[in-house]
Image: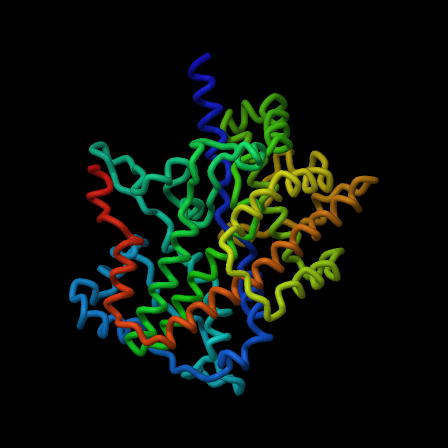
Length: 410
């Protein structure tokens, strides 16, 4: 009985395996739409010369020599040093010149590179024990169920708030404290941006800021701010007791249900050709504006909506997502996307559930737009103050904490 209880406790925290917060194109579209209306006033439409990462690192070396090469810089940021974080998209000028563009505007950089954090930098962060088995490198990784492959980045892109008696359903999970590093990553990339601006590397100032926007957007996705809801638990038990025990096992049955619902939601919302393209366009328009949201409660607001969203998804799809078929999204490399239409079950509950899904999406997009503008405006204001690069390095030192070896020996 005791081992069964421990298994259930472990189950509750290992479910949110799909680590993409939104469709990749949505990350870029969200940034662009959120900033278009302020672009001219904030001078986000003025050209910036594209510099290689080595240009930034060369200047950084003058004040912190040990961070002057790409591998050591990545190690300092506690990201995968095998990933080329200086990689650039294939850019072409309006005439299609094969040489590509030499400049970009800040709004182009912020939009284009809002997907940077999904380049693998947060994946495969593990060490090996004496037997060669991979072990978590960071404390929160063990609560997200994967330390290798695409889903191993979940601990950086998700964040559950601490358990609250005011919201026991949405905040339920183990441990009771907050878990996940998304908020911390937002702060790290904000300070990296400030450091680059202070070193007169404007391209990298905007590029690092785009990286921070990614995590901010992730925290507006309700599936990224909770662990499991009653409806998903019920569906998981249904799978377990019908076909899942033999084919997926205990944990795999629940993972199957939550991952399918997660991926279905992202793909359904991202499909411009879907049956509700008009509702999607209306939701996207909520990103526009000039208002600023200076609060940091968007994670908690997303968490409060998680149970309601999972109920709506269940009502829209019936038992379609609890069958043997896995729903794939654009994060599953080498696998074709599933069509959301194949999983929708028409019926009296569909219209209301569909309305509620897009009501939640509109709310989250509206918040994401305001939070994006506040994040970018704060970076612009800090840049105008002309702070010393050393100040930003000290702030980064605080955010990044002790070395990996020190963390593992504490």
